Length: 457
Image (cartoon, rainbow, N blue to C red):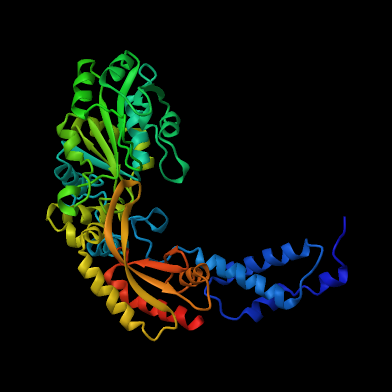
């Protein structure tokens, strides 16, 4: 094994020397020192020691990557409204205001203001969620997977460990997580029925027995099947399960709280109220997808079951904090007031007319006309995203950017590493920014970002 020349190692600058040469860095000093030490230690282990200038470049690049990894605001120009990588649903102004109001002060999180004694943690939110979902009762935990885990833990006991589920619903959700793995990690034993494409009521009935804890229906929200397919209506499944006194739970995934076909002109997404009216014992769905709220898993259904879930020891580990509860409270109230089309950004973005997007695109192009970039306005299509309505697309308007000196890939990187970062897509040799997923209040910042990138080309 060859080791670095000792004289070359002595040429590696000291930590303090590198720190002084870097100047002001928008990171805590201890963090900067830690990065410098790690980078210099890595260089010492190499056979060839780079020159001082290259060492400084490596340290700056490491610090730059670290700064970019901070959670920060970005402009979503991808054309995917509920974008998991970009934080899913943006919160509405009332929800944001609630975060500042409750997060920056004390609150009555678990205090009964009338008696002055300890009170319920989310009484108001749970009451209004039940009204919104048309259920006896409701509660929230920190995401939909947590909701499913809690439900399975409640229903599946040592004597009744089986979860009956269609093979066509053993789906994979985001981040590589799979429904069967979540169920098994909860202590359940899967009883798969039917086939990938066809499952009948009789398939479920034959699997129900003394060891069945619950029947689970999982909405296939992130893919679709067509052709020779069959699945029983939820009401028929409930009727069959009731004859054997077995509860039915439906995981709705996204959780639409409006009639998407009527309000948005896209295909119908199942609503919690519809499943509960069909007799399902419990439904669960995400709070930060089509609902447009904070990350949460909403559970709604029969009062006695929801009450039992809240008494489960696992509930405390899965419950939401005051910030999620406060922002969800504002979101739910917007729906109950009939203001979701203006107060919930996801709904606003999905319902905005194409003509309005055209006007915004023309204004941005005109404001950025001094840019060295070739800017054009084209028609496009937007997807809902977030594992929701995979077949649904909406007409949109996109800005297309092209540089005479930079490739589309290079241009895209420059946009992403700007301030604020702009996340776009690439088609051919052009960068595309979909205006349906850009909030109107961001138009000025987007224009400035385009002009800044143009100056670099």
